[in-house]
Image 1: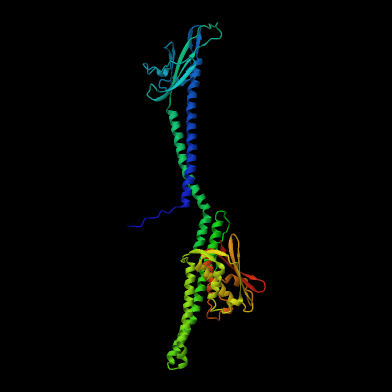
Image 2 (image 1 turned 180 degrees about the horizontal axis):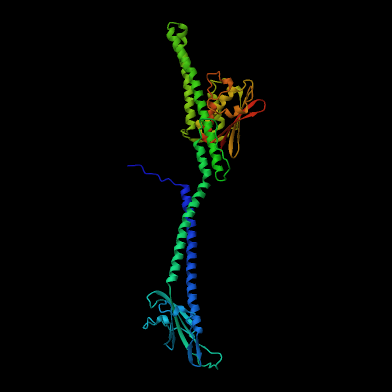
Length: 477
């Protein structure tokens, strides 16, 4: 089976699509509203034109003492006089035709629509004109006006019905043109919006693209590098700062790895060279009793040193990779520290005379026994080796509701510099006084630091007055 393809999402594409869709919907809504409004306005103008003509024709009908007169002048409204005209009108009095436009002469049998509607009301309907064209008819019911110069009979009035009809071809043509213009404008606007949004989003994403290009140029194996910004961007700056921290950390780790590899090679080179030298001498002088008498013990001593280095390196790797299983239990510190001190008697026979222990018998912590034992064993061994034999070593335990603090102080010949304090927990880091000692490999405090990190303990080194060095271990309760 072929591996399933993972769909790659695009911030730019998503932004362009979403913004374009929102703006396009807004534009289409606006255009549609305007189009409908314009269409309505055009139709209102057409209907108003019918109403104006109807009102004019009404004024031409006059009630002259019961005699109806229609004073129509064709020269003013020629659209009704031409035989092939497309506009028509018809007047009724008491449901009988009173007058027709000359344009209806070609259609003698045709009657314009006449509806029963209240006086002084009108109605507009769609209507197929006598010539077969689509049109619109306006039907109105009104009272014929009377001559003001003649005596008026207020009890008698004559009602008329007027229907005028006009084609809607021009109206429909205008409406189609308006719709086409709005549709084309809408399409152009949508594509224009997408183009502009694409340009704007591309420009807005430039800092992110620029950041990506700078990341491509990074090389943590070379000189110290960071990602620089030509102009700060509020959303990008947190990412850039975190990336710079990550880059700096990885550069330090890379340099530490190079140094660690070099130091491991150096530490193993010396015993290997000794083994080779002893073997070459033994092979060259096989009968020399001075060589054969100590050869086996020398080989064993060198092998034990190599084993110690390898074991410490493996312990350092285990602590750093979180492969140690933690089993926490309640530990009484006074007894636990005393047992640890007893284990160092073979290396430091005068440990009881040099160590001042200050811890209440009831002090207890909850921790992994192996981890705490390894930490205290290395800290005590380090203090006993580097501390002046003439000055005491103080181990003080202090408990609070939040944590337990174990402070181990020893006096040095020379106080450590700030750089030495920072590097004291680095793997294979050794002070000058221990470089000539075959038993010191610079791994003890590195192991302590790794195990503390694994257990979420805090370990730090501080200079105290009188050239004293304090290693402070903090265990959370």
